[in-house]
Each structure stands twice: as structure tokens, then as C-alpha cells.
Length: 572
Image 1 (cartoon, rainbow, N blue to C red):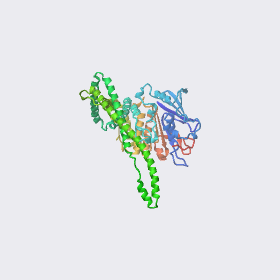
Image 2: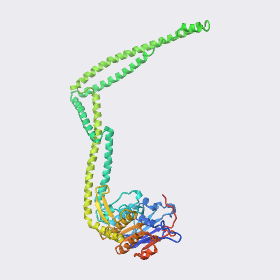
Image 3: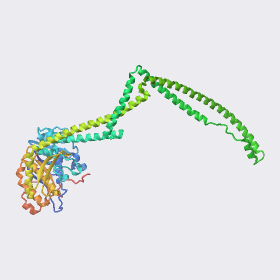
Image 4: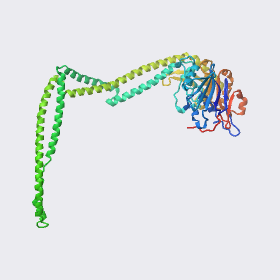
């Protein structure tokens, strides 16, 4: 059993709050100066309890209090009991991952927050196997619901904005249903998601490689295999010919030499084409120039003709010399081309002779080309085959895990059937509460196992289902039934904290409080901590209320007397 004893801080920033067995009220009240009861610190008080019980710092409102507004070394402290152990946790908000743990007044050496949580888990659940019970923080989920969960769901206990997936493990455990198959099925569901993602990537790779889907690609694989086998057979037959390796080497050498000489021949032919473009002998007619300039001035044309004749004579000497060089080069290139033609003929004949040694039954036309083709086919086959094998392996793994998941779901269903009495006990208490508040028993509670993403369905239906206040009422019925039912003894930690759950109509609130009053005997060895705005009840309501609230008030906060004795602005 988990019992909160005292909440305080070092140094003191708020009045210490003592809690007792049974019903504990934390009130928000109006004052003459202010009629507001929100923002006085009720929720922050609950958050401090949760923080001391090692809620993640980053998910807590405590992390939003600017550290500059807090005294250095500020510690949130909580005294509580787990069965016969007296526990104190002192958590420094400046060293949030290194809380101090005291057991029966003695400091217990722990390295960090994780070790404290491990200790508290073992203390809370004893010798129960870890896969058959939730963790300490997990069980606190439905026991200290986040106010921002808005109490919309009996399963989802956390801030609705954070989209945290529903966790049925603590709920199953509280009902006496072994959660191990649920956890295993959940784990397998995550594995299946990864396998589906891997299969999708393989599909994309196959489509990129072949342009076809998986089924069509399998046909391509068979065709590639057949082609590769054919070229391999050709090569295998050749390998049986005597002197194969020598002949193969000679053929490859000849192919290389032929390629080189043909390349050289192409270069020379290109050079011949460029030589053909050179014409020379482009001279100006001297007589035409003389006649033209004599028209302007007698004797001018004759003078120009004489000078032009001298220039032309010099140019002819240069052209004759250049032409002799080009003709010589042309002759040499032509001879080299002719020589290459002869050499290529000789090489081609030698190549045909060598290939004829290997070309049995028309097997090969070019050894090097065939080997290259075979290698390419083998590479294509290998790539496609590896993708298809990976797809096949993923598919088989999916089938195996899907069968294993279904087996776990079936086992969980068996456990749910075995826990029928526990479920009916909770339903019986919910029916009792429903009749007390609404005057009828038009409600039901059931647990079903489904082969879907969530695996489990907790189905609680009450009268006039669907509205905001009705959702809160459902959560109250469910949580309070779990707390007080004899069927949960030994599993339920015996603690329940509701922060502003009763945002309901006035009549429903009064009936809820009166019902709590009627069941105080069931809370004798347990704790129910409730925050409430007192202005929700009129002075007349307080007089007719069966619950004597003053006997259960542990702290009262107002705008003038807030929970935390500092002024600050929460960071975003």
C-alpha cells in the first residue's frame, strides 16, 4: 500500500501539508478581495507530489517555474509509506535526475533517478515478475491523472495535446489480468510495423531496378537466371577445351591489339581529312589591280602591280615549301594507314584462327564480350535475387510474428475470461455508484480483447453518455471502484488523486460527495486525495451535504494565500 504522509520543501516555499488515511481535501476558496478560485495552486500542489514521486522533469509543470525565481538548491520533499517501509524522497529541481532516497530514516545510496524507480517498483510489486506487473511510474498513471487529460477517457491519463498512446498495462494489472501477453503483443505490433516498413523499402528498390512490381520481378528473376545459366554453360564448355586458358589469353590480347590499331587508324584518317582542306594558290590577279588603279591616276596601277608581284612571288615560295611538307606528311600518313590495314588483316586472320579453336557449335563470337555479358547478367541476377530474398524473409518473419502476436492475444483473452469475477466486481460497484448519482443502473462495464492496434477495449457506458461532464463522471466511477473494490486488494496501491475532476453540475457534485461520505469505511486503509473549488457549493449545499468537509480538509488556498509563496510566470 502506498500512503502519502507529508509534502514539504527545503528551503520552505509553502506550508507543509500532512495527509492521512481516508479522504483528503485540498480546497480553493474565494476571498473578499477575489471571487476567483483558479490559479491558487491546487493543481501545482498535486504536481509537486507527482514530481516527488519522480515524474519526468520535462513533462512536469515544475520545469516551467523559472529557476531564477527559486532559491538555490530548492528541494521538493515527500514522506510516504510503501507497506511497512517509511520513505522520503528529496528531489532538487536543479539536479532533477539525482534525487535522494531515505528508507526508514536512513539515506540509501542510489546513483540516479532510475535506480530509485527500480527500488520503488520492487517495493511496490514485490516478487511479481517484471513482465507481469507495470513499473512504479506506469501504475501511477491512472492513480494521479494529469489534469490536462481532461478526464476524457478511463484509459488515457495524460495531457491530450501530447498524443501519448493508450497504455492498458496498469489497468489490466489492477483488474488481476496478467499484462504480460498484452505487453508482448504490443512489442510484436511494433516489430510488425518495422517489418512492413522494411518490405516497403524493398518494394521500392525492386521497382527502381526493374520498373515492375514484386510479382512481375519474380518472372524477370527466372529469365535472368536462365540467361546467366546459358552463358555459363558456354563458358563451361570452352573451359573443357585443351589449352583453353592459353587460347583465351591470346584472343583477349588480340582483341586489345586490334582495338588499339583501329583507334590509331581512325586518328590518321581524321588527319588526312584535315590535310585535304588545305588548297593554297589563292592569288590576286595583278593585271586587274593595275587597270583598276590606273583609272584613278596614270602609272599608279603599274606601280602597285610591281609591288604586288614581288609579294606574290614571296608567298609562292612559302606556299611551295609548306605544300612540300604537307605532301610529305600526307604520303607518310597514307603509307601508315595502308600498313595498319595490312596489320589489321593479319590480326583479324589470327583472331579468326584462335576463335575457331573455341567456337564450337557457334558458342562464342567474342570471348571477352561474352564474359562481360555473363558478369552483367550475374550482377543483375544477384541484385534482384537479394532484394526478392529479403522481401521473402521479411514476409516470412511477418507471418511468424503475426502468428505469435495472435497467440499472445489469445492468451490474453484467456486471462480476461479468468478475471471475469474481478471485472464483474468493478461493474457491480459502478452500478451502485450510478444508481446513487443518477437513480438508475443504465450503465455497463466490460473488458474485451480485440485483434486490432490497441488489442484491448475497456467499455464503460453510463446514462446520457457523451458529454464533457459525463466523461468525467465515468472516470470518477471507474477510478473510485478500482480503489475501493475488495477484488483489487493486494494489487491496487491504495492511492487515488483527482485534480479538479468534479467540473460537473451542482446536483451531480453533491451526490458524488455524498457517495464518498457513504463509503468512508472503504477508505479506512486507503487514500483518496481530491482538489475542489469550494465556491461550487452554496452555503445551503454545505448545510445539506452529508459529507463533513471540514474533517477532511488538508489545505486551503486563495488568491491571497496561494500554495507557493513566490510570484512567477511559467515559461513556455
